[in-house]
Structure formats: C-alpha cells, structure tokens
Image (tube, rainbow, N blue to C red; front, side, top):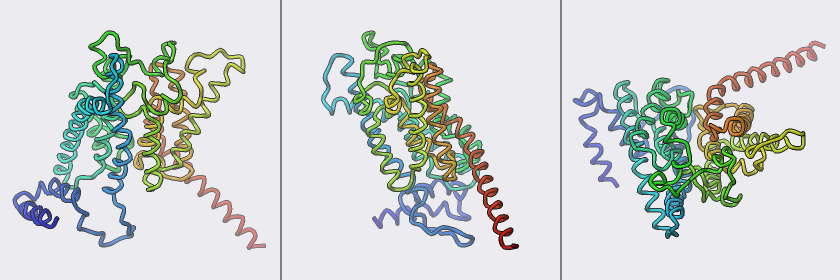
Length: 391
C-alpha cells in the first residue's frame, strides 16, 4: 500500500504549513488519519503510552454495532413482507431493508461529517473521529420510513446544538445520537410514533398495523409476540433496537475490549429489573395495575430500545459518569427511570431515551459527590491515623 501513502503525501503538499491551502489542512489530515495511524506523538507533559487511540475505539464500537445493524436490515424487510402475507427469502428481506436503511446512513454521514469538517476548518483544529459512531447510531434508532430530510435536519441539530455548541468531541454533555432522536421525536411526532411508522411502507397498506409491543400495551391491546420473539427481535420497532440477542453480542465485544463499561450496563439492567419487579408486585399489595405494570419484569428488559440504549448510548464515555461508584449509580438510575417513564407515561414508551438524556445532565453531579465522599473518607482516615500516632 506504499503507493497510496505516496499519492496521499503528494495530495497533502498544498495543504502544508505556509502553503496555499493551509487553512483546509484539517480536512485532508482527517483522510490521512482515517487511512493511517497519525504520524505525530506527544512531545511533553504526562501522557499514556498505549496503542489504543480514539480512532481504534470508535472503530471497535462500529464493529460492535454491525450485528444489530445487519439484523435490523433483515428484520425491516421481513416485517414488510410478512405483514403483506408473503414469506420472503433471507436475501429478499435483507435487500429490502438495506434499500431503506443505507440511504439514511449515507445522509447521516454526509451531513454530519460535512458539519464536522466545516467546524474543524473554521476553528483550525483536526477532525475528530467521534462522528464515526454517532453517524451510524442515528439511523439505527430511527423508524424505517422516516424521510431522509428529517434525518438530515436531526443530524444538523445533534451536531451543531448537541455537540459543537459545547466545544466539539469530548465536550458535549448530551449523547449526540439521542439528541437527534429526541429532536425528531418532538419536532416530527407523527413520523416517530404511532402504529404505522415501524413497518416499511405500512402507511400505504391499510391491512398493516406494525404496532410495537409497548404501543400495544399502552393502548390496552393484546400482545401477539412471546418472550423468544422479543429476545431475538423478530418484531416491529426502530431499525436496530429490536434484537436483544444481537445487541448483547455487540456488548460482549465492547466489554472484552474494555471500550464499554460493564458496570454501567449491568447496573442499568439491574435498575430496570428492580423497577419492573416493583410494578409486578403492585397487585400483591392491593393496587390494581394495568397492562404495562403487569408486563413481566424480564420482558421489560428485552423490548423497546432499553438494551440498545444501555449498551451503546448509556456507556458513551463523554456523557456518562467517570468514577467507578458513579457508574454504578448512573447506570442503575437509567434503568430504573426508563421503566418508570415507560409505565407512568405511555406517551413516551421508549423511556430509555429520556432517562439517558436526563442522567447525562446529572452525571457530573454524581461524580462530584462520589469524589467528595472519597475525600471526606480519606480525611477522616487521616485524622484517625494522626490521633493514634499522637498517642
């Protein structure tokens, strides 16, 4: 691949220091670092010597997303054909799903990276690789038939308001992908909710319902799927959020590579289970429940966007808690609040979105009090040691 290196070096010449296009060097350098390891190292100050950099971390997350993405493409096609009364082949279902989803991914990357490049050139800094993950996450948490222009507008809002307004990669307080989802949810509610948006082209056929499990429960309708359907993901829903099985495969990769925090994942599932058990116990306490409160706690863990949100967005290293104890608290509250919002407010059945965004805001506060508690405990220990020494 030496000829690529030589060709790229030749292209970069006009973008060098003092050259004609120096101002646009961040754009060409982004291409260089995407293809090759950066050729610069830290010269001074304390720094960690490690082979893992931001690019490798982001690519690991992208690889972890691939199983859920491929399944989401197949499931989108499968739901479309089966609700028309047809039994598609694997390839037919996959092609139909890809035909819908790939353009969304392209729009997300073109618009998002275009804004990232523009800000990098304007501010005179290098383009960060953070959008490699965000650009894939945004389409994966959208309904299958959302118009491409809505995806584009949501991306603009997420990158400009949710990220660049705070200083760019590493400075945002909210998860950018969930910021895009929240914007689309409140700006275009008819395209983000209801029983026609979760199955491809359902709006064109009266016979297709496409209602999600949580939507059915909120409406008091009977659920037509069993726990195995929910776990494997052969149900209507957002593009890549339906299959807990394939999401857990991605989680395994993140945990093994130490890219994702297992503490946040585990504590979030525990929090969701605790809240689910509390609701399930209401009838025993003489409180009449409803379809959502009586929904088995373990099924709460495998439907909707809960698993996807916990694994791929609650663990965002920028917007999540940073201390070990803080991660346990942060994750537990996300799971706990997700089920609470889901049950108490059926208008927002995907409570995980609001729960994660809320805890993103409180993550620094959680870390602050965890650190303060550690400081007080050490001061108390030091005082005790000094008292014993004095004696």
